[in-house]
Length: 103
Image (cartoon, rainbow, N blue to C red; front, side, top):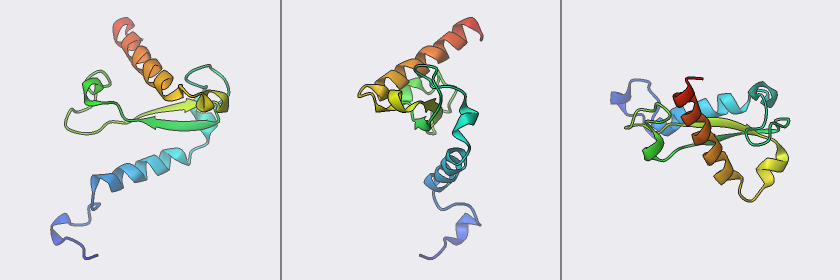
C-alpha cells in the first residue's frame, strides 16, 4: 500500500497509535498494576475498557476521541460470567467516589 504524502510520517490511522499504546502497556509486568479490581487478589491479567460516550466526561476524556481505562484482574474474577459488568460498575463507582471525595 502506497503511503499518503500528506501524512508526513504520521501513523496511517488512529487505530495504529492506539494499538502501539496498548501493546506497550500489555507487555509490562502484570504485577505493576497492583491488585485485582474486583476482589483485591493477586493480578494475573490486565484489561482495557472503552467507556461509552456518556461516561467520557466522568473519566476526563475529550468527547471527540475514544478513551480507554486500564484495569487488572485475577484469574477467578476474569473467569466470572459477569466480570465485564462488574468491572464497568466498579470503575464508574471508583471514579464517582474520587470526584465526590477528592481522593
